[in-house]
Image (cartoon, rainbow, N blue to C red):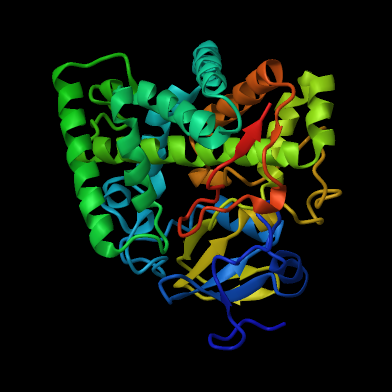
Length: 404
């Protein structure tokens, strides 16, 4: 298979998958025969798709290769979205300024803070399960638990009222658009989102609270400067999108994977101490993680057997890399005891997900509470009837019907 020349047997990206919890059939073939492959993005632009673990980790870890956007690199979608948004342009994307911003925000994602937040997350999960049980079975676990839990957590951290959380679902969907929304719909939604966050930042400046944005209004960076209003707005937008959309989808995907083969759920019931490694393996085994991470190759580079010239856009498929047998024994099997588990689901290097400690905490607590409260939990429909989320940069399931 040769996919190096545009126009010859090109793959349209994202690649379709045959089943809701199974990977695209092309992943294995590309890893073996064409690990750097030309693909056509939803915008019609071309990029090079990376599917091997070592290649993906190399690019993601290299600070020379920044994110695409702002006219740099291929367009991911022709109707806009997170890769070409005001939010992205307001924040430093690389270099010392980016690292200063990360260090400032990372203070809210320390192990100490996550430990302190854990009981509140557990309390919220219990409350949501109470409501789900009160409404009777079957229920949509994504709507009842997977979505509201991480929204509540990130809204709490940013000082945003719970009553506004439904707005963020639509706003973040438009930011994560590939093909679902038109440019006019995205512009309208992002104008609303921007206006909301500008007012929210001003309110925090006037009357600070015990939340991340309030602290950032007065906390200087390493060079003694304060974040601008635009940077605070971009920070709030980015954390609201990343802090609820990906985790909300991952909760339902994780539970679906564990229930798809009942032996996995029974293994956890028998040994709840496996929750931590089960969460990490769910992240690695996720066959529906979304589009992956685009990177701009700013200078000529050798990648495996391929020479990529400066100006190339690469799509790093962390999902494909996480199934690479060169990096993981039994890569195509879900092993709940796997440790160590150096998956790339949160990226790698200077742009790795800064909220990964929070995501891990939410996933672990959710799984612990479900095992304790609903040991008889099961899918209410056959696995093959589950439907994937389409047209967005993140992967997920439309709903997760369950019974107990």
